[in-house]
Length: 150
Image (cartoon, rainbow, N blue to C red; front, side, top):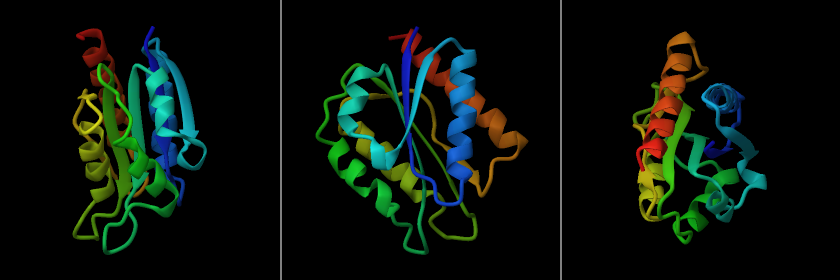
């Protein structure tokens, strides 16, 4: 049974809702899941997981990382996650030119750790609708499949 750790930052509750959808999806797939808000997480915690997942929103017109996840982001590249699977997801607003840029930023940061990308990023416009929920469930399945194919 793979161990999944989901770390997230949420301002309006949208990314938190996505994390909850993922938690349920992973549990239905037989995984052990831990969900932690970014302010309470340390990137080293991912060393105890088989699958590392980060969810974040993107802040403002400059597409900044949220303040509450910046330290986690900066420290992540120093962690060796060789042999782990990773995935990134988040919420944003298509009104902004750099839609969900923080999700892509985490994708790049994970690549520096030696972890393997298990699924394409999932980006949710504002709050998750039914289609987004299905995309998140498929994301969880792809991450589990990637783990099983190691």
